Amino acid sequence: MLPTILALFLACTLGLVSAHGGLSNYTVGDTWYRGYDPSTAEEEQVGQPWMVQRQWRTIDPIFDAESKFMACNDPGVSVGKGYIDVEAGEEITAVYYYWLHPVGPMTVWLAFCEEDCTTLDVNKVGWFKIWEAGLLEGNLAEGMWYQKQFQRWDGSPGLWPVRIPKSLKEGLYLIRHEILSIHVEDKPQFYMECASLNVTTGGKGMPGKEWLKRFPGVYKRDDPSIKINIYTEEAMRTTNYTIPGGPVWTAE
Picture (cartoon, rainbow, N blue to C red):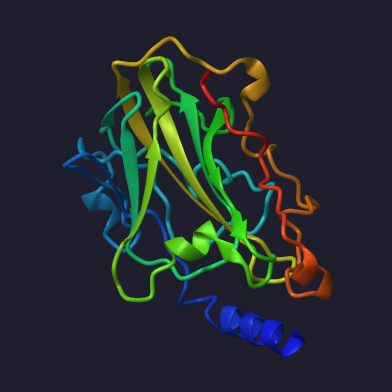
């Protein structure tokens, strides 16, 4: 059994550099919204009215669970005036054109912007989780993770559909997609991107203060779901995993 774990560890470790990725664009129905592209010249994207996503400089991850960039990546600043139009109860799909990591949870968060998402301080606003997926079956090392289902080796895009809560109050929000990869011993990799939403035809639902969290602050470096080694005999016997960040707001 241990040789199998070792082979998995080596395969993941050797692919560290090439396997990084990020959220490229979004779709709502038949409408396509472009995200920020760190490989394209900054001046071609900053200030554009169509830019819906906050800036991120590299496909490399954030390694520190308490980093100041945990909210919306590095630098996470607003670089455009665009918004993604989506109805409450409608699906928004995040598109990743390159994703090879197989192990760890994926979560989606919202933050209410009041009047303007482009001037919002992402480190001071309250975030609430609306979606999560982690270990679906099997053990920590060799089981089926949602992230593994999302993984792409054939060049096709990874599609991550999430439904906006139907009862959510209409208004302006930031949406935050996060992938936490835990395939390297005690060295978590956080990948997150944020975009501006204009939620329409919603209800009156809003989470109470007990649901709101701040980045950084949601996670701790020593959280056993974050500082973890899945390549152990104990991990081979473990078939449950607690997704960090607390429960999903159900909007009921």
